[in-house]
Image 1: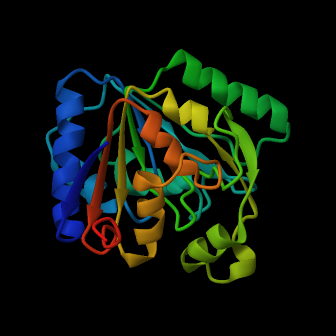
Image 2 (image 1 turned 90 degrees about the vertical axis):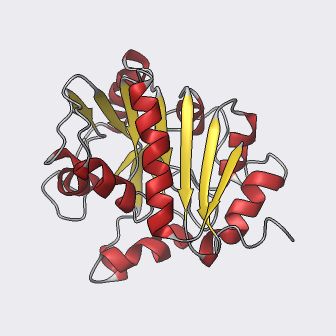
Length: 235
């Protein structure tokens, strides 16, 4: 793991963009993308850049179950607002939150990942060390699946909704093995609430209790953290 500690989110976005740009210039064709607050600065840098994605493909980590792509809380909507409207890709794939047949949707999305091997995967991390929506206890061999969200994840995401009860309880997500298939991984984390998860991910045991700890087994991982998120690493 290459751990890059930055002063704040603004510096983190700059460093993340350089890592992303280097992958792009080195020929990465398929980009695995993430949502949430962590990649917002990076997406802003990409929007402001001259990078052209008209010959590149994106696949997203996850999507809430039960939300249409037009719903302002969906990850389809998020990605259009934060990236795709300004920087359209040749193809952009996300799970279908309204899929009626769960097994068929899981199979469909996993086939997309198999047909479009990810060159560069962007990740955030939850306070319980989930990546994608792979909550603690998820097998490391898991591929695309429908997930029941942990209460900690629901609590963390309620800030994006008017009421906690509006937060979806299920989501479709790439599995941990799906994520590990990527050739290169960049994880971004900011804030003291992520400090324990980062410590457990980087220096703890590789255990399904800490989903992100599996990244210790990947040959090409960069982790960008601000001083707050890195606070426990040097103790």
